[in-house]
Length: 116
Image 1 (cartoon, rainbow, N blue to C red):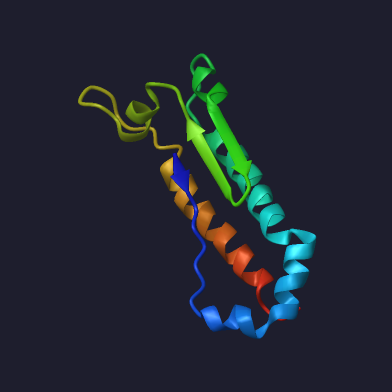
Image 2 (image 1 turned 180 degrees about the horizontal axis):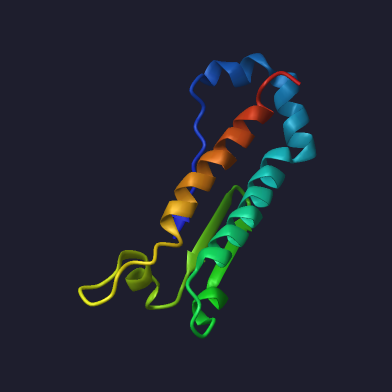
């Protein structure tokens, strides 16, 4: 299971812009932004997952709750597809996409904290 964490580089910026913060919280924009980004990430990972029987794709799940969002792949052989073995080459589909798209999600969340 992987987690995306957004940290503020300047914590004082949030306290200085309480009006902006209250607007973000009222509209729940942060959660919507993360969930939309997670949906986009799901599509990317689903499309790039190797397909033989379709089981690997069927085990890709996303979860979101109060203050968190996560994506998992529960097929037992997903790690062998991702990293490869001594007999089979790697077919990376999860971690590269997760890292590259999580940066996009973090940037989108940070954009919410700029002056509206």
